[in-house]
Length: 419
Image (cartoon, rainbow, N blue to C red; front, top):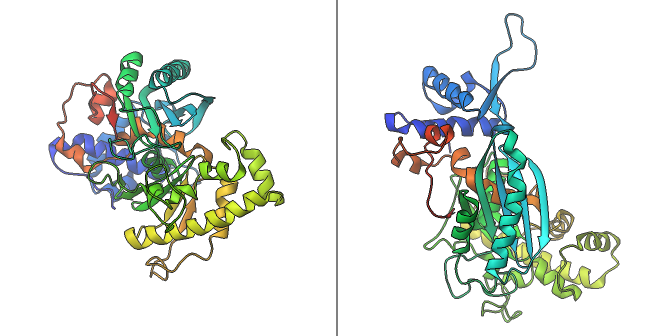
């Protein structure tokens, strides 16, 4: 998908976001190169880069290298200190929070066990961590808001908030409106798989990709299909809930009411069951050590079956959706995921095999154990850094709370927003 600006006068915020996105994806880029990529006039691009510099979102630096005459050209890059966001990853029994800057660096991270069955206690814990993190960027940049990633489905269905890999005890997400009121910050939330996909798209291995499938391997198993740099939602926002695809006929009973669901074989919860543990989180080092030494028959048996189910899942995803690649992220230890991917080879023949323009069929996140929290932190800045065509349909003049909102066309919502 080409990054192309629009010519309508009302599209100014969209064009600014397009230019900002091109700078983000390139890392460092000259004004001439921006003009070539966005197909806007040199004067328009000059005005936009001047505006973005004025509000501190980008910085200009002289490019390296030598030239025979004159100064090296100026190149633009994102300003890491232009803003921050707070990401919160919620899993049953665990809350992780982090402060992340505009280029995806995790500046401060904290994690605590928590009884997530009680939404009110969870709210209190979220407020406490936000208040501790929000003071850190006070001297530089601004705080764009709070993003929360949690297991789905989020829209009320027969399998929402059901089972040990979901937030049992919850009936709705009104707690996030209460969080917004308590902190006076913008609050955005999403299914953890969608958040992880957006994080990989902005700051990870998928930053140059427009289309891919993201597999979220954590306590449970989820997925997200990214098409033209937007996550496909489905009819009610519950698309690609791959963890509850019945893949093994007559297989293990699942808490969703089916049997043989993929998550019952390929998740940290299924690993804990195989090892006779309540939870493997916090014991990842032991698992990785046993994996390397081959000292645990139970772990070996689980890996053999999990790798087979992973092979099946990749085949289903590829034949159903034909993504360019499958990116695997989540909170599972990278050494464990790497081992499973190796054991899943060779993959099943599928529509991705033997294509004219081959691409790695599986890519592993470089931020494997941080992808959930990074994805959560992306939510408040996603629209800013990954412009969508819907921005063209929004009015340029809005009531913003700062120069950034005014210039980039962001709206201040009265409620927590779902991405």
